[in-house]
Image (tube, rainbow, N blue to C red; front, side, top):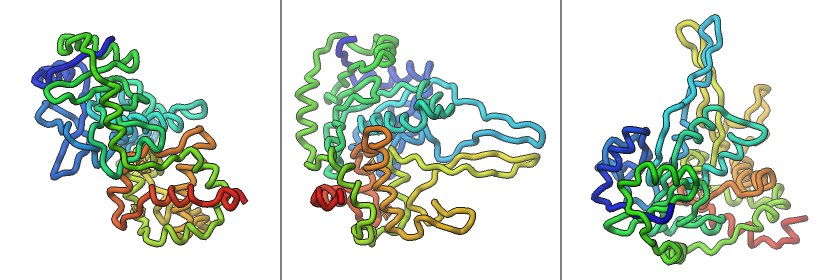
Amino acid sequence: MADSKMAKAKLGEFLAAVSADYEVYGPKADNGVVTFGRIASADELALTYSNSTVSAKELFLPKTETVYEFDGENFVDDPLPEQKRVVLGLRPCDCRALTLLDGTFDCERVQDPFYVTRRANTVLVALACDRPLSSCFCTATGGDPYGEEGVDVLLSDEGESFLAKAVTDRGKDFLEQYGKFFSGKAAGKWAERAKAASGKMTCDLSLAEVSQRLDGLFEDDMWERVSQKCIGCGTCSYLCPTCYCFDLIDDKTATGVKKIRRWDCCMFQSFALHASGHDPRPITAARFRQKIMHKFNYHPQRCGLNSCVGCGRCVRACPVNLDIRQLLGDILAAAPSAASE
Ligand code: SF4
Ligand code: SF4
């Protein structure tokens, strides 16, 4: 479908029509905190945010979910989340983050049924980013404020209307299904708008070589130094759209037990603790190194891409102001010969 356009005045009517066919989720603001939740009307949508405080990750990988239950006699799988959903207004960096999570939960080796079902049943209608924050660095990681990776439909806020562009066949079908709300063939200045947005990015890091530089830094004493301030709170990982560590726990029920998957975090002291009492990462520096190595060395070696989309949430939310961009800059500044020794 060619570019099209929807007047913002039609948003309420559009949402009512979409809600008849799908569960609709979008950004909601509460005291300045923007999270993704179920949307019942256009009034609830907070579409003027720069980036959400919490990413849309939990719509695909909930904080906790029951995987199966043993009722004392039988094992019963929890029903798969079959409902059709639309997530409206998430940023391109969060859509790109989902393509990275696919590499873990929907790949040749692993097909996580809950994750795969949610991904298959969800249309992603992203809103391009015209006002990136000073903490955003998506372009350094290969993304873009107008990026289309993982996006089904891309919207751009033109003031009185939204420009809309189908990126995938699923997006094309979606725009056609609700075609009466869009005026067809609205030639949008996508390239100009995208250029203006990426021109506002302030980070000039280039992370193409960071994985290679990290190869020789495992034993480096820099980890002690850079992690000195870290209090291991896990905020960075919980807000990160690409972090996916989880734990499986048993919860007793009246007749049996439930197996529950819940988010975990490699920055926590107990994360790597073995049942024997041995802890291969007993100090903060080792845990901090694990997080950085996983994102920028192990993940690219396994999947070809850094596990960071430059959303900047960890920069904005860290209580002790640890800035991952500064650390990456230091790693890149390390002499290649020293790094590969
Ligand atoms: S948010 Fe900051 S202090 Fe908390 S674990 Fe992450 S780096 Fe450490
Ligand atoms: S590491 Fe930080 S900047 Fe990168 S995706 Fe995670 S939260 Fe965003």
